[in-house]
Image 1 (spheres, rainbow, N blue to C red):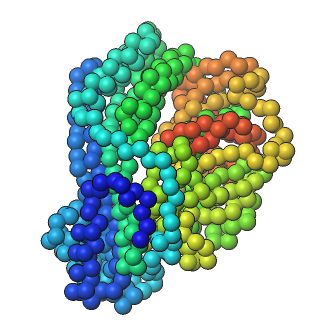
Image 2 (image 1 turned 90 degrees about the vertical axis):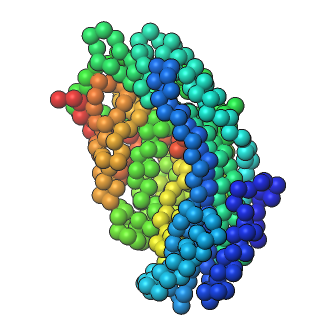
Image 3 (image 1 turned 180 degrees about the vertical axis):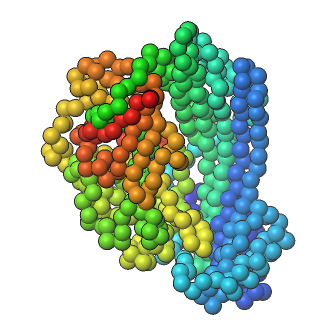
Length: 460
């Protein structure tokens, strides 16, 4: 058995759980089983003009049990951690296995007993609702006072979470980890006489409340909101577009199915099973998925199947190198599971934390192009909106409202309202420049990325 956190006092008692499952397996004549358990303690607050708007405290538990019966799989989930609840769930999974499918049955990950990576993981105790409320009230006040045109902070929140995750199976795999996270988000509303209200937001995360960059969150939110007060409409046309790190990561995330083996097998990706080795972008773009990056706060070191997480190169110099896999998709591709799977009958596969970088820079003809120093006329896209509605991932197309600026000879003018539309294949093959400086965001690491001739539609 493998575990990096032996000194931590866990809420989920592995020994009690294991002994109970072993007894139930023997009683029900089950030789193969696994389970995933999850527990979280969450506190969150919201305010409105100095008054508490919402105070929440919750304790969540869940456990998923899978059993194999004559090669058929049954699964049950429950939030009842009591002895009777576990018994009912195990017996339910056993009965469900009688009706399991023979077509696609997950197995144990062959990496579920491999050593886990060791990460610096600070476990911070909860500070309590009252302290969170006082801090958020002050943050709201400081943000409103930071600029004369900011009139309110209609969306805000401060939260703390302590989360625990465990994986066990009948082949003696044991994974257990605990982590903590604090986060704050602020979304301000600014307005000037005779002009439309304008808004912008910012978010920060950390292991604990004391490490949270609240001043930085206030400053960024204030600066973005005030920068949008001087706005103008934009003419519908094709423009050179520079995506901020956050915006480009959101765009790649919206089309992550192109690197997702589960999506490819299900026919909901723009790629097929022969995509490895295909050139899909300019030769100076590389993309990896690195759950272990120090900027990814916080992260578990194993996935739902017990596979260790890792840094995996998806795209190198424009060529697809790898896909993200569960155990079952890896078998179909003759590959290894990559640490991106959930625990289920048909394990879903999800990306963790993208890293966008420039490689093979000699192949880029616009190495001097920079959002900090250029006379080019271009659109700077700061954030993309309505990703859930404006993206057709299986087709590769998108049409998304955005917040941003028209930049002409270094002068930025906020765009009143507009959408950016295109095709992800076109975007990847028409990148002019991937800047050198990477910026850590909540969804990954990326520099600013420039794309040639994207369609921008202004307000009619």
